[in-house]
Image (cartoon, rainbow, N blue to C red; front, side):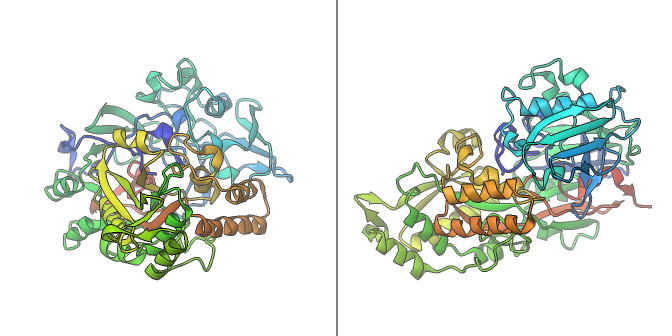
Amino acid sequence: MTLRRIQGAAAAAALLTGVAACSAPTGGTDDTGSADSVVIGVASEPDTLSPLLGYGKDGNSKIFDGLLTRDTDLKLRPALAKALPQVADDGLTYTYTLRDGVKFSDGEPLTSADVVFTYKTILDAKTNNTSRSELDAIKEVRADGDDTLVFTLKYPYAPFAGRTVLPIVPEHIAGKQDPNTGAFNTKPVGTGPYVLAGWSKGEKLTFKANPTYWGGAPKVKKVTMAIIEDDDVRATRLRSGDLDGAVLPPNLAATFKNDTGKKTYDAKTYDFRTVTLPTANKVTGDRAIRQALDAAVDRQTMVDQILDGAGRPAYGPLPVDDPWFAQGIERKQDLAKAKRILDQAGWKTGDGGIRTKDRHRAAFTLLYPSGDKVRQDHALAYASDAKKAGIDVKAESATWEVIEPRMKNTAVLAGFGSNGDPDFGLYTLLHSSLAGDGFNNMARYDNPAVDEALDSGRRNSDAAARKTAYDTLQRELLKNPGYTFLTHINHVYVLADRWDGLSTQVEPHEHGFASGPWWNLEAWQPKK
């Protein structure tokens, strides 16, 4: 989700979510144009760099490594582990053996005790990590000597190996601090290819190559992530040569198409834009209103006009080309259906064409984060479509500091999406047990049939049974939407064409630090 606090992340731990100053970074940009340095403009910064609080939990952190990692095609590969895990026949035991000779950036060796410490600390209820439910299957994690880890599960959890991309932290440092408030949150030490060299809050984060990295010292020696919230400013600074690369909305990325010195990367994603419809609100809590909004929205036009075609209509939380997508739930705008639903539910047309019921106007506020042009355009288009059905939606920009306290009762133009397995994003988005838990289940959605499907999908190791569960879930969302799903957006990046080895993965919602063409930054080679 595109939300401010890592501690409140729902679908996945935020890598670069937040509200940051729009000012240009002070310093660091002298490295633009250098073969061994890169300066990248991103929209926001994290609150913490500690995996114990959720940072980097889905992999690709440049400071840390997990037991496993994912390659370009998202297949799991060994990282800190020598090989993929040995899995018991009953699916309840996973055994990993650590790679030899790995050291943290302070020179201390990695041991199995560090892995045990990392997982146990995250699972501790006193640790402020709202992604804890993603590790619910773990019954025990223990060390068997210095180099072997054994995970025992409560139930067979088919995608468990994908959860072990979780970054590992050093017990000898983090174990001496409060995980919620300790210095490790801003001064991390890991085993990864880069080391944090400096952090000017609201301006930039600077990283230097780890010369003793177990995977080989990176060729790009210095990386600066410049925090530039405003999309237009980011594009301007890239055009002026003050940045080597940037995350950009599709319409701004298109302005670089004739720049022969730059290359555009367009990554498909699981990242969707959606409107939360809080059940506590008298209007958005009405099922007929939610169903009518789902029918009234013109998703294809949003893709064409807002995303310049760089995306797909979202008919639910999973993209249409995902193997878990429920076939046949695609739908076009149907204003006649929207009006019929409202008529049958007793919402009668009133002044100005806005409907009323029991003296309540069909009207509500939709908040979107300031400075996010793509969300603003989605919010305005959504309001326009809703009005055609007789629902008055007032789109309003605000900072996340303003949005957070209002989420219980006010609709929000939000972003979510996790790759790897449907459980990774859907459980935190929809399960009623997580309603109101930070940014988890922001709409406070409560549907027993969906809860049952989520629990079945999580606890069943049979692929066919899981497919049935997630099909059921997606069809239940049609009957009783807790969100209006709008679009799945592509992530677009523009970079100076000076390096070889760049590629993109199919990305989750979170992007900036880890996802993007720099997901494998340590493997880049300067062009000769």
